[in-house]
Length: 381
Image 1 (cartoon, rainbow, N blue to C red):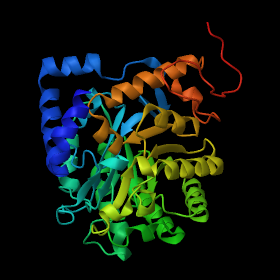
Image 2 (image 1 turned 30 degrees about the horizontal axis):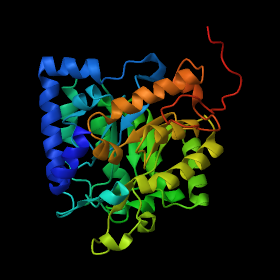
Image 3 (image 1 turned 90 degrees about the horizontal axis):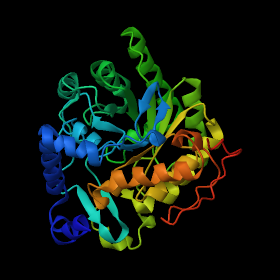
């Protein structure tokens, strides 16, 4: 309630990037003050064994993570971990530092609990991010999301990605190749079969040459058709990738309740609640295509605990949030974790991982009961 009032009175009247910088400074400062960090760890941190997920060779304290874009330069992932997130995907980072697109480039759409993002990968570059990751402790699982530098032509994209991978792969827990942002000209062309096959081959050659063994995933757009989704899934299996992150922001504004409200803002991608139905459709199609042979990380439109539960039931091993956290506030990840843990116990499961891919998500209405279909019920004791 306090955060909702603060958002309504102050934050929604503050430029979005300004509010983001304030959040970064506040959380980062709190995480560096031992008494504050101890309170956050006790009250917010994910510690319930019902939430634990083993995937990508890692043990996640919660399936709920932070999507790329929240911590672009790896400056506050420790604080995000203390707030209840099970992992943080930093970036998107590019081989060369770049300022991104001109401001304003991030816009709230409160009536839809959505954002319009046309950031263009602003970041301090792979070398600087690598220096920060070298100084990190082992408390938070950190993935790195890598994209194409704006200055690199599509024909040289493989070389550009390899430069980032060379710097960052030894320092992260998993690596995501972002080929789906609508804000870098030409980037989404790389989701086509042949460009993507070439890119995956380049990255594999880089990892092999450096003798680096790190999980590799790709992040795809929600605006692909079914045949394109299937082709990417097949290619991921062909190249023995570890997983797929689905989905990025959408260029489709028809999902908004009043698209005309932002008609004057050109370009960008929509995130938040309106993206949820499409993100769920893509997840379900991927699950049908690959089963449990790939780790599926679902992102896009996860605004409530029920959204997170629905994605897990549909086949997501892990989920990520960005806009839901912006609108939900600092207590939001802990609320999601509490209700996920309760749902696990209602289903008679030992951990949320047992429920990945169950057929029906049921309801998280706070009144108990479950309609989850998980097959034979495990013994209760």
